[in-house]
Amino acid sequence: MDLTVVSYVVYLVISVALTVWVARTLSRNGRVFLADVLHGNEKLADAVNHLLVVGFYLVNLGFVALYLQDDTTITDARGVFEALSKKLGVVLLVLGVMHLGNVYALNKFRRRGMMEREQTPPVGPQGWVAPTPGR
Image (cartoon, helix red, strand yellow):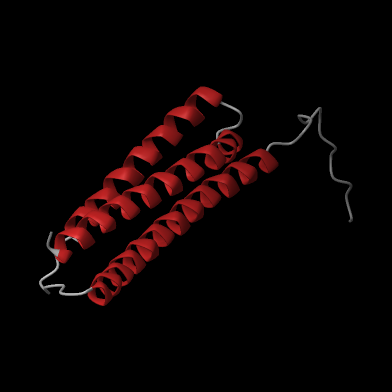
């Protein structure tokens, strides 16, 4: 079997496994975060979480598929490792950037929700006091 094909298969298996692992981790831990952002609306948090995971899969698996092609011919085991390290390194960087982007966006939503909660007074005004003249 051609070593280029072997490197393609290993690249796909590892890249897809990493993408699934990161997506599951983000989904499991992000659900609690989303529930807080969405003021405890669990059903909406689950829906948004699912949509984020689907988008994550589409972007990352699309990138993995586009990045599969390699114009060099691999002739030995060293070439397989070099090609895999380059490709997997880029995939890991893309996964990391996507993860940081998700965390940044969710944190921004969370902060906005916290500010909205803080702007609401705990007790409504019950009256007013007229200003005293001369002060």
